[in-house]
Amino acid sequence: MKVLRVLVIAAFAFNLGFASVVDDYLGSLKQEVLKENPSFKNFDAKRGEEIFTSKHIGKKGKEISCTTCHTINLSNSGENTFTGKTIEPLSPKANPKRFTDIKEIEKWMKRNFNDVYNREGTALEKGDVTTYIINQ
Image 1 (cartoon, rainbow, N blue to C red):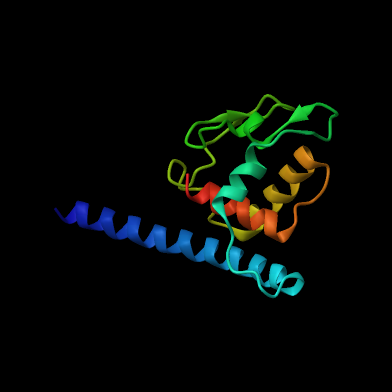
Image 2: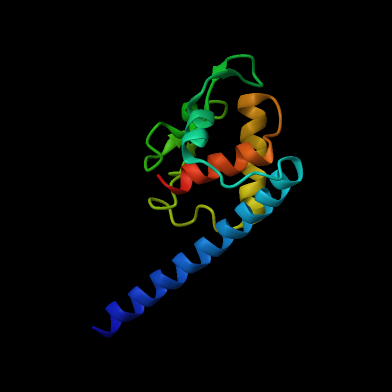
């Protein structure tokens, strides 16, 4: 019983940490969006899904989407189409290591937008995609 209680407390503390990091990240993105659009209210998971699943000619000149590497089911592992390396599940529900460090989130958002869109994502796009991912 004592072990179970410790595990529940640890899981609760982890979830609070995860939520805090994501809230901080989304909060900073929201401040960026508000500078351009003072009437902005919230990020949207549906817009994020459209960004995540839409296909574009990527940095290597072939059609690609986020799902090319991460798969449509974010609870599954994927494979980097450029390197062949396995990518652990993107969903934080399936992979508790996801979305626990703002610098890592920023690094991968920048890199992945460049791979798929040949540009860095806007604050609105990153917020929408993050909202989509954390709800998977």
